[in-house]
Structures are given as C-alpha cells and as structure tokens.
Length: 403
View 1 (cartoon, rainbow, N blue to C red):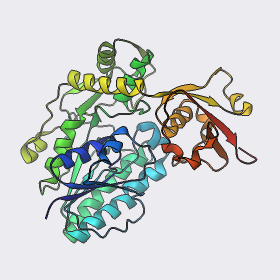
View 2: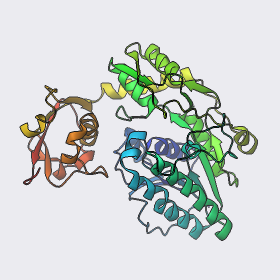
View 3: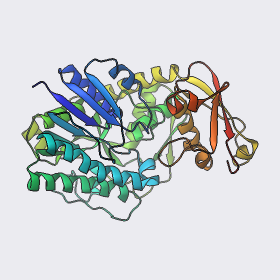
View 4: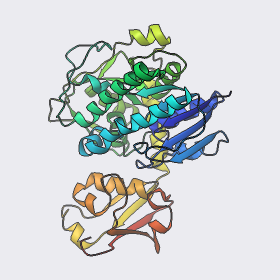
C-alpha cells in the first residue's frame, strides 16, 4: 500500500512545508485545516499537485473520515503568543477535542500518529537545557495556560491512547521554528523582526538577554518525518540546541535586511525566560539534529518575505467616521496585503478597538459589517480569501444598527 498521510493543520506554516516534503517522497497527502488563519501562498502550489487534497474542516469537530491512512500528523493548533493569550478557549479545544479526533482516526486504521506538542509544556523552565524528563514549571491559570495546558493534555491523551488502546502514538516537542513561508503579519519573534526591519521600523526587544532555540523549518520537518518513520513514543525535543539571545537575533536581522534599528523595550518576566532543548534523545532515537546555520536560515527567511511584501497590494481602508474617532491619532489607514483576510488581520491587530466591528474571535467576518472591494461585497467573492492585486480600497459599512 502506498503512503497516505493525513495532516491536521496542513495549511499552516509548518504544515505546508511538511505536506510538500511528504509529496516529494511519493506519498498521497490530505491536509485538514479550518483556514481561519488564512491561506499561505504555499497552499496554492500544493493544491496543484495531483496527490494532494485539502479538506476545510475544524478538527475540534469529528471528521467523517472513511479512507485508510498509513499515518496521521496532528499539527492543528492556534499559534502565536498574542493570539493564544487572547483566545484560550479555541486553543484548549484544539489540544483536547482536536487531539481526540485525530487519535480516533489513527486508532480506526491502525495508523502511526505523530502529535506536535510544544516547548511551552516546560513553562518558565528552571532547568537549562530542558531534557524530556523535566516535568516543567507551568502556571495552570496563567496568561499562557490555555496553550500550555492544551499541549500538556495532548501529551497525556496520546499516551493514554497508546497504553489503553495500543495506538502507535509519538509526541514531538518543537522549539521555535522559523524560515521561508512566514507571513509578515505573523507576530512570532523571527517573522515580526523581519517584517519590522523590511519596513524600516524599530525592532523592539523586551529582555535582550532572553534565550530562544531557533530551528530552521526544513530541519524541523526532517525531524517530524523521522519521528513518523519510527515507533518511538516520545516525547522527543526537536529544536536547535544552541540558544540565541533575542538581542543578538534582532541585530542579525537588521544587518541581514540592511534597514531597521534595534530598540530596547520594557522587560517582562516572560521575556526573561530561557528555553533551549536537550536533543540527545533526538540524536540517539531518530538520528536527527539541525544542520542549518542561523545566519543562513535568517537570510532565506528575509529573502522570502522581501519578495512576498514586494508582491503585495497596497490596501487603503475606508471606514465609518465613528470608527476613526476611536483612533484619532491615525490620519490614514493603509497596509500591504495579498488578501482581504490579511488586510483585515493587520487592521485588527494594529487597532484592536476595531476588531469587534470586523472579525469574530475565531477570525471570521462579523455579520454586522460588510466589506466591499470596488462594487463587490467580499462575501460574494471569496470572503477573507479574496486575493488582492494592485492598489485597492476596502470599504467597511455597517450592515445593521450597532455596527
């Protein structure tokens, strides 16, 4: 039987890289994704492949799946510190209900399943570097608890299915992953720094001595596939074992881009945390370790995002006067984006006071506002996925009282 691999979260940054790598090795790949985080350009290329299928579905709901698979790769989860802090409920549901649904598919077909956890299970680590035997230092009711506890539940349920039902489950604990394919609107540290530098803005560093493990995405995907090909239960750390100070990362990005500047911001307790993996188990069990030097990976990420930004449309927003009165310090609303969703996410992230008038907590257009592109309501086009070309104006009009 040829490989047929189901990838939850397959339309995301890591997911699209994984799907491409699996296709390269001859597998049939089905990606399951809600697409609430938008569509990456890589997804368009994947959909042109005859062995790739995309199912738009929220994995927190049971999936009526009736096709045998050889493996399940469970990556689906909200990402980004700001997003998971603001939306802990869908984050917890992805780690709980989503995990159970993925495990049930693997159990039904006797498939190997690899579940992507997170270095966040270590919390504010008191051990450096962190081995898999370290139980962590997590606050179950802290601001990041929605994400941390979701991943801790994922690990516990994976091991429960392995012990009780004999499911061939394996757990990967990724550390920071970066590389080509990140969106300029992505607020994780590498993407945020690169986007700021390309715009000639300040790279704000909160806690310049904070240490992070930065693993290039191709290296990480190699580790994921090695885990899939093994029967190891894990958890296994996959990340760069050499930590990088955030201040040094900012300086590297600025020097690579050639624009931007580094500015120190106020330090917080979270910013001071260090998180670097002990990868001895990955070396011994999977024969894996990262090989891409940081400067080469950052160069690739910069070149990709530079091209992505150059191809984006300039988007102007025409919004009701009552809205602009909420942000009086702004004379014009303008950004660069390649889709309606990308433009609206920029607007709501830049001016959170406008968010309830545009997007729901799960990232969908709210019913009480219409968005027009020229004469067309974007709901009559492709909604948030509507592609933008050339300079455009998006017009926001209340659809009913209260908008």
